Length: 324
Ligand code: PEP
Ligand code: MG
Image 1: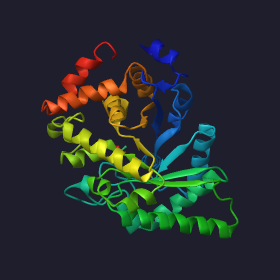
Image 2 (image 1 turned 120 degrees about the horizontal axis):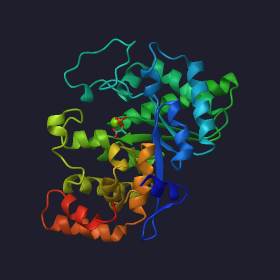
Image 3 (image 1 turned 120 degrees about the vertical axis):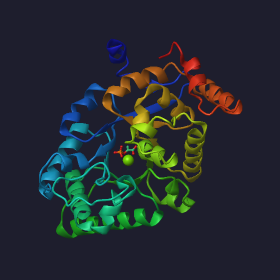
Image 4 (image 1 turned 30 degrees about the horizontal axis):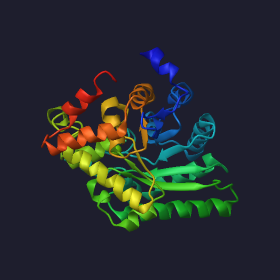
């Protein structure tokens, strides 16, 4: 199998029906960067910046971070890197920050909620990103946005950071895109204004799924109970795709399911055209996409739905048999 994946490394993820799917990789550590070359990824769709904060025993300094972000962009050699701002709290607790004792940390004070309530660290990070880009294009994504105003406020911080850098005479990014993760049902249901305000959206399927089914992604007893290929969840994804299309919002999917071949094929059949996954998954996902006709797969999914199946998995596995 490894050889099979190597042989398609430089080939496009083009389906049998001629759709080109963009496959990117998730990263967060310097050690991940060589994979950009080796995996055939078309960029970094999710750079989890919190990992750099989690591997230290002190808050990293701005200069340290900007150097690091600069290295990441160097290693990407012009391919786009989507830097997600700090997603701490919940399962990611910084050893040097006072832990908050919350009954439901996944639904607690985390990610952009911390960033907006205590903006010092977020400002420092935005400044480090701008300095790291130093005249190159910059892409930033805010995590766990649950209502529009949170994005607007975070974007305002970004504008202020740019203005400060301009006054200091530092080079500004050549271009800037600011997007949001779609990880809560609430933000999917926000008005069209939100879809137009963001430069792009990326579905964080791990969180979106846990909140859609109200099933903790860390809880083994309930985690496997709800299938990503459940008809309700697929319908939800399809509807998000539609809303993005209607509003001209670029959309990608970056949860773990993007790296699972069967799930990736189905997510693509629902209309997603950009997936971001761990580097080792790019080969297997590309391999199945290159042997799949999306309209056929879509018909299989629709038939299973119409028959009243709860999950389309059995039907899809039957169809994909031999392609896996
Ligand atoms: C997600 O929620 O799907 C996601 C990509 O973010 P994380 O797994 O880091 O929460
Ligand atoms: Mg998430």
